[in-house]
Image (tube, rainbow, N blue to C red; front, side):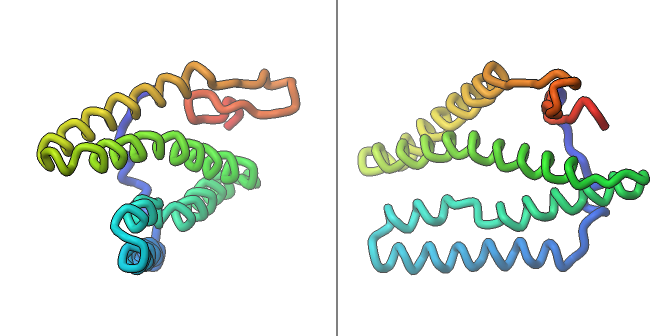
Length: 159
């Protein structure tokens, strides 16, 4: 699987969708600040690390994938759900790297802020790559005749 940028996704979305993402991110940041004021920066940081735009992104992914299939004369409901599920699985796996980064900074920041960021960045990279390889190793696909559509490399074998 090649990693690449897909700019045509920008054409599929409207400004209101981007505004909703921006607003949800802002609300999450304000709430994280309130939690930090009440319970300290460690608790606030946990809430700030929450992917605030995830819910909006998941619904947009589902909607856009469904629309792509409907434009081709297919229902697209299942494909939209699978795309959103795949995105949410990636977010869950990716949170391990973010958690590692946060713990590394928290653990080392008092000794050396610069060193803590360098170590945390390296730790994030190692954990993110390890999680990607682990996901690939644990990936389960279902044969086409088994009644379920398996996701292979992030795509359904039945387009």
